[in-house]
Length: 339
Ligand SMILES: *[C@@H]1O[C@H](CO)[C@@H](O)[C@H](O)[C@H]1NC(C)=O
Ligand SMILES: *[C@@H]1O[C@H](CO)[C@@H](O)[C@H](O)[C@H]1NC(C)=O
Ligand SMILES: *[C@@H]1O[C@H](CO)[C@@H](O)[C@H](O)[C@H]1NC(C)=O
Image (cartoon, rainbow, N blue to C red):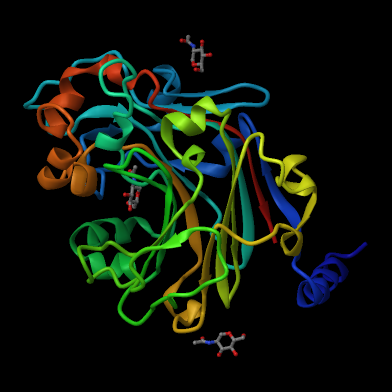
């Protein structure tokens, strides 16, 4: 069968209903092929030292088995306060970039902090963990760090984020000026700020609070994790979350099927319609990025950190307490991308 026929067929199908076919089934060591390791200075100024692939593998900061991919931060080394960087960690970015697509993340564990003294240290130290970001060339990186507008021009979709917050995940879009969300939307989550403009309110973005407490951190992990899914088209972005044992996990999501029909997935957790945001104007082709940093511009903000009730300063805490990061790891069962 020719590729052209397949493409045509899927175009027609997409017009009629939201059926997508798998283009990438990323499992275990497949993460090493699909993602590039970014040993760069953290753009969010976190207390991390992003290592390259060889270092990550030799220090077991990434680990692949037949059906698992683990990505973690160092949890054994005390960092000198005078070190210019911070705790070894990993930041990976897909080689492919995506516009219209569906991505389903089957996650068994997400990073959380120390368990004993503070139940949810993750809330002290972790900014967004999984994002869709514009594809950048090497030349863009240096500009990006100094010119935030350049970054925001391609749009950012934060799928997993939470800080200074004992509970649920927040899903957020960040754009340049001109993209806002209506107050009333067809979603199960709660709308937060409606303006996606990164210039507004310290780059808060237009966020939606996920209703399930099991969507983030220790509660997510204790529950066996779950699925996050994104559907992006030219006219909307939808995000769903299903806890591991929820009764409403769609069969195609649960089984990692070769095709998925988002029309059968029910009301999304977060709905970003194009009512007053022209998506092709505000969002480029984006990479999927998985990063694990500590402190930095958001979590390490002295006011945010102090309000969280966490000890010491964020950087000092991260430096001095490696064992607090034993559970600072992602464990992925799979990442499936559909077009
Ligand atoms: C590396 O990490 C994996 C996943 O956490 C673990 O199962 C394995 O035992 C670790 N290997 C070593 C040598 O520590
Ligand atoms: C991940 O990277 C994106 C872009 O640099 C950033 O917005 C986000 O805060 C980072 N999160 C973590 C945990 O590093
Ligand atoms: C939203 O999408 C609809 C349907 O494709 C289109 O007609 C409309 O112009 C879009 N609105 C904006 C603000 O981009």
